[in-house]
Image (cartoon, rainbow, N blue to C red):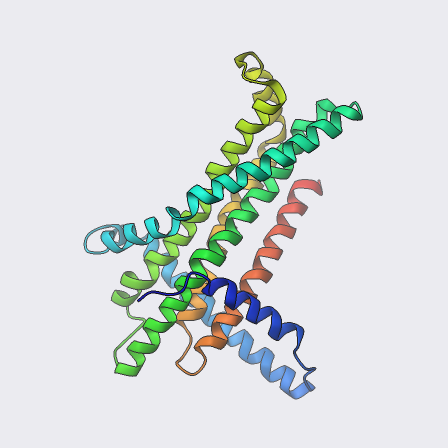
Length: 282
């Protein structure tokens, strides 16, 4: 079953439009909505935990589950990696050049590379990778799984058993997380290489100075926050949209996908706020 590649963007735009044009609710309706939303969120958390438990099981990486897992990982990472890397390179070149020239004009060249590492590697690249995978990979996958679940319910088939989760949900969850980690790792390494070349040129003699500077930025606390933040973004992007779509019934499939997009954006915002607090409120 083929889902349009712009399904993720369409879901996000529909969620934003509904949120901005929503009418104020009476207190009784508001409490009913909160109870229903809490119950739905709990089902999403439960289903996500179940999928992660199956993902951690060694048997999920053996035949016959290895083939669908590999196919979904290639589907999640291969189309995005070339153009995302190119776009990250172009944006990185512009940002690095602007920061270096501005810092040099104010006599602050010694702080420029540290600022670039913090802005690009710590903040912008992981967030950009997560949102790109969400819009182009996991939200379309969530729509695809919702269609599969609706078709199965219409036929009276049993869904959400272990076999269905291993065959359809777990490979997509792992593929989404893998896509975020791969894009973030490749783009972060490329940003460091570009920063070195633009700051020192094509010389190997400044490598020691550059690695000391990067090491000063990535102290143990910031390194831990960076790893936890990237892992949390990958987990949120891969689990929340897919679990929201899978747990929906036939009647509320579209509504649950919109709620899943809203949950995802709120969770990503919360992860960013916690990471900023961990990095700078010390």
